[in-house]
Image (cartoon, rainbow, N blue to C red):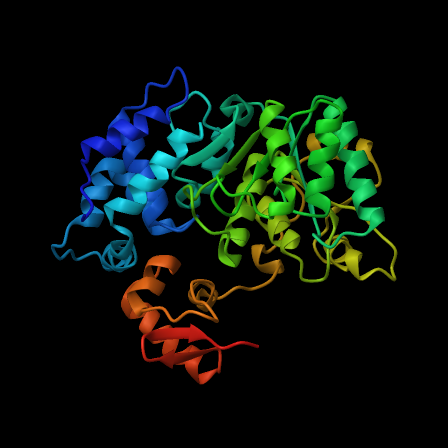
Amino acid sequence: MIFDAHDAAGIRLARALAPRESGVPDAERYARAVWSHLAEPGESTAGALVAALGPIAALDAAADTGGLVDEMLEEGRRRWRPRLVHEPIARSLATAARRGIRLVVPGDPHWPSAVDDLGDHAPIALWTRGDPTALVELSPGVALVGARAATSYGEHTAAELAADLCGAGIAVVSGGAYGIDGAAHRAALGVGGMTVAVMAGGVDRTYPSGNTDLVERIVASGGAVIAEVPCGAAPTKWRFLQRNRLIAALADATVVVEAGWRSGSLNTAGHAASLGRPIGAVPGPITSAASAGTHRLLREYDAVCITGTDDVLELLGEAPRARVDAEAGPRVSEDTRVLDAMSVRTSRTVDDIARRSGHAPADVEARLGLLRLSGDVEPTESGWRRRPR
């Protein structure tokens, strides 16, 4: 079934996802749910269109096959059209309703206004497990982030900071991953504090799966687990990096506890500083590769040295420090989205890759040609696949 921007069944499903005491019209909530399927997190063209026209009129404009002069809109349409299909949208809405997942949108009493600082890159909607009230109880809040492959020193420090901060009435935001993230969440829960986990994939499928119990504890404790992408969406590399900007926006300050030289946590710090949020870094042994990234923040980007909870409390009360380039972390090209959408074992068509990656089919074809030259992909009788490394 081809997508209908005014689908009555979809609007009824969206109504079931509304938090209590919300005055947002059901059709607008449904339109934002659809947009979360069409656009990748942080896509500025979609954000600007929704801000200018409202989500419903913006959807009509996205689905319109008529030609417009605006080149950016037409380019956006080519990306969105492969995803303008009814079935997957209805399926994710039904999954959310069945599992008690809420769709929090601007205008809801639980919308975290801090994310609006992202401008056109702000989330269009937030799929939420747990208590949506947690999203407006994040101020004051601190993002504690760092390496997945953390050392015992890093995990101990993260846990100590999280427990002390929660004891002082400060919420902890992190990414629900292994290592520093998990240590921070667990310590916050251990002292009865508020913690929110921001996921790169749909909130109905915990990633990593080894943290399923942790996620369930966050939900049961009155915290929340949130994502910009709908139920069933995969946690790709691109979405992890876009998730970082949301972690930074939700918190009043970001502290990198432990990170390698090119850790994604540096990307989170860059987003925080670009938003005017202060950043801190915990020093480690000079012989530890796991602390090379935090030392880089201290040396090159004027991050505040964090040696204990008092330093973090002071950080929350200080003016923002020097800005950090959001590209300080790993640089991920648009080609990464195409590769994320492909499989080593299974061939996929250009249209399928376009739908999974969020690119227009013509863009996918062009990138596949370049990726073939670099040896990353190969054509098959039924489509394309990644070459094993």
